[in-house]
Length: 100
Length: 168
Image (tube, rainbow over all chains, first blue to last red; front, side, top):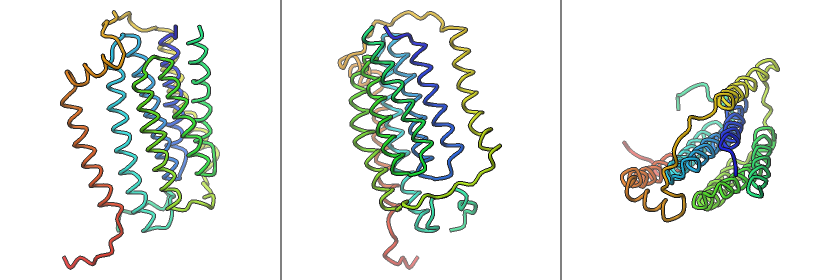
């Protein structure tokens, strides 16, 4: 029997690591990857509660989170590619102006 | 007992791989560790008896998103390691704040505990997931398909090269 607390702590750890990645790294691709980790942490917590309540709703919400993560990754990469064509760089420090 | 051991093994693997994703300098190594973290998370889902989600995780994340990442890194050609200068103090603070937040929430949960909640008895198997998804969550499900279509169109529009000169 897996205690729900352990599942929530695992989710929080994954979330915190992803958060650190988004805040600390300056490479756009690595930041997007850290976002995936962050959403994964949220999914783990959702599944843990779904199991605690013996309900399929945790899995279903996690499914919607995955759909959203896919959308975010696709659009994010399109933006990274467009940005790379303009600046020849993936560093967020070069992203300090909005003029195309 | 075996279930708990499997959970702990996959949890440790997932957290370790997640830390390595953030720490690695080489972006390609980061992606491979991301694939590792995602597969370990799928293992966690399996040990929590969420088989459907574990399968989706492997198919969509490991099969789709990680491949997408690799393609983008090959296109963007991030071979040279970009230096990321930042003052040491700023780095420490930026790491400490998220970690402290996570630890605090975890501590609050462990001290306070969760409110007792009755099991709904709906079950968690494939059948229960399908019945609830298509009975109670049909509208969000259809909305998700519209979202994916919009993402498809939007991503192509943003990422394409503008070869044709538009007179407007």
